[in-house]
Image (cartoon, rainbow, N blue to C red):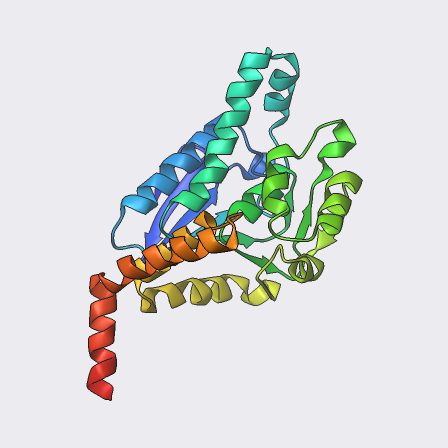
Length: 255
């Protein structure tokens, strides 16, 4: 296991694990952690042996807030400095969708504010039964601005408004019902269940999963006809991949 400052990066077989490593600060997001997360995601994306990435947090919570010292600096910063800071976080959220590997958030404890945004930015979210989610930014006069774009794609307009403007925490099961969480596992079996969930991707075509991920996000917001056209192009690309041709050959051999 190698430490990249605020983030731990390790590989187990075909699965990379990225661990937010500021437990004494509840893994609060700051500039350094955001940069380390970007580097770790790029590192995973460039490893041809990997099939999935798990993101989790050291200690009792995944991530509960932004760093207090960072918040103080933001409150005193000029417009240009705040714009640069916001764009850095925007780049991180975008990167989750751009890398070809499935990114899985493994949520223990609380994922609040930026931590909730970080989890929901992942392709998949797994949570313990005791996990908590929420967007409390409005309580300090802040706006959950960029995470709104993610939340709105996960749940209805009415529920998104409620979560964003009331600042309340919700449990893992309610988050699952709203579409923010894919699976909820018991606390005592969570680590094993997360690994088992991630290892499913080891048995699937890496190129097919990557193309599917790209297509899903690329067609988001497209008109129906445009989405079909984009899908047709992806279909052609998929047919020409080595995985597809081998898969077809295996299927025909069984017939």
